[in-house]
Image: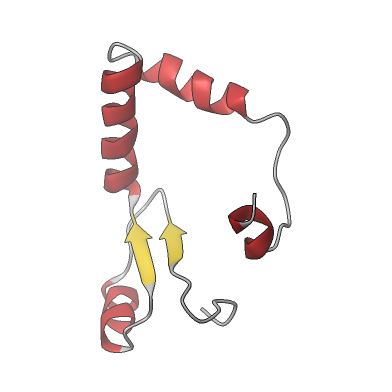
Length: 83
């Protein structure tokens, strides 16, 4: 949260679930953060597989991974936003 600049929205993705206190804090403090949990991630991947790969989830994931030329590490948000 501390790294967000004015007008930015953060996205916090987990393959698990968010604790109730974490969700409560986001709502009460009105943080501009979108929470994406494991079920949301699976739902999105299945939709992408259905729409673009004939329902083949493995092919969809392979396509996503092969599109990455190299692993992305330590990048500032503005580097990604300005691409």
